[in-house]
Image (cartoon, rainbow, N blue to C red):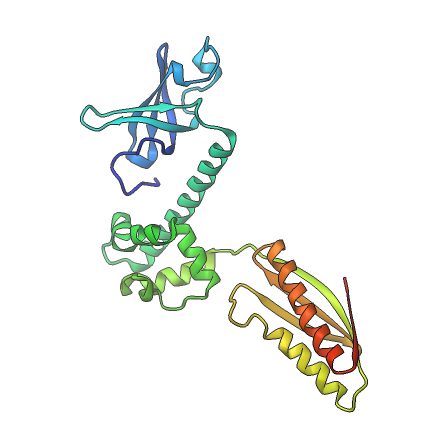
Length: 265
């Protein structure tokens, strides 16, 4: 069960819960993220329009995204709203919830590897919450480790007992979305050292983003004077932008050395 670091939710926070009981005055919801604490969606917070039957909007055992509108720890009361959650907010919370579930699943796998009497609560306490503070989400931290090819997790404050098994699990289970765009250069250089000019231009292009771990460039010879370039990036916009930069670099180098360069898709 995915849990939050805080004992009680905050006013204005979007939370996920399961409707457990529908009554005439409202719906009761258990909040899984907060140790199944119970909150109430009053009938006035079910929908913006007049509500004749609450079950037309929410039913028992239904998973719902709600907004916290009041919290009173002393009385154990949490007031919730269904009507104050729009579609975008609902989708964003469900996505966050699923990512938190994935992160916890990976923590459990690491726990099995460590096998030193540790518990899931230990994993959260010893490094999980710290990663959440630093990266916003534990799963985002795992993605960053994979993207940036971080090899020593102790540098992130993760205890040595967890570091190696967790890194192996991240490498195995975290998949980073990527997009590959391609194109072909046709390069001619008529100077005496034309072949070297072309080689240097292509090598320069391949090394353009050496410091960017999320960018991969591959250039192969199709058969002179044609050279195929494949560029992989996290998203289409970035890929197209980086490819444009490479094209500019190569064409400028070739044309500066009395050559002719074309690029086509």
